[in-house]
Length: 448
Image 1 (cartoon, rainbow, N blue to C red):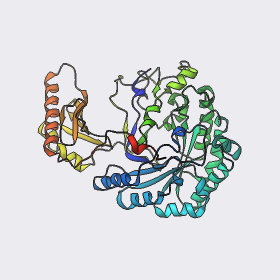
Image 2: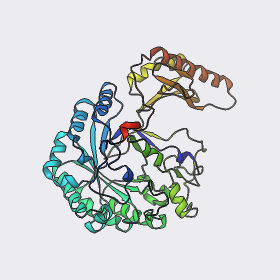
Image 3: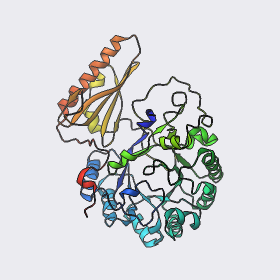
């Protein structure tokens, strides 16, 4: 069942999410880090300082988001927030929270005064009956709602997040009716990801026959009230006029590495035939195992261009709560661009962009009708590489050149070789990339 969708997701290269706590005072039935609660550690303040200082020196991230567990339980949260605001050069600092502690208006105001300008608050039901059952904590809804009202009165940017599952699928429109008067910048709807219940023994995966119509009605209600929406992990072809609401982008996340081993993979029978195959992930493997491929229900949008197996997911810039996602960065990383300065010009080519996150730096070169990506990753001394410099393994990928033009391909090869030599000559060993997706080893586990 492996496919493009099983390997990559669209990425927001300029957004960083940091997990700083693995405690929570709720116990949501669909929690995707449930097994890690009270076991894993978040990113230490010392390592966070290193990351922020690095971003201050050579900016790559425009936003940092703090999450958990429940991030508001972190004792040093204000240290993290203050340091991010004063040293990182971030345009936005976001908090992802269940909102319960925000019921304390003084606490909410203190967060805003410290520099949080965006709050991403979970709301999984329109009332206490639904949400308290999901959270398994009486009073969870009332606290979260008071928190949202406090944020609205304090003038903060509000985004809400609702996880779509069998427990609330009948209440989605009611959630819109409840939230809309708060004038949120966006309401997000995330289809449940079965990370620790692969067989769906909890019965939380909602069938598309039920979920899609209910979600469309909620999106209709939101549109009527001029509330922007984003949908994740629901096939675009099931949303009718709301297909453009699908936004599967995710930021670069610092979390325990094991989290990624559990993260679901996606697939779709119509991947090679659908115009939106690169944006729409289709169905999780767990959904397919439970309900099948939905062969009759999913209808591909006819492609207007030939299918090409992607080398990577789509790249975006940064989240824009009040508008469309920013396009992928176009090369605004001068320190990294300097590693290949002059290479494109020497070959009559163009450096079309520089994409940078914690794990890699990608230079995209365009030469006439051809193009190639030169990729830097942390030096490993083990993985295959075109070249190794003080800091990096250098490789290339996504070679695209017209058939029957060996001369153009030869020029492209010489450009790649020159780029590798240029990086080797200019890499002084002070620039950092991290091959890990998250925390590994002893630092990931909480001391007992």
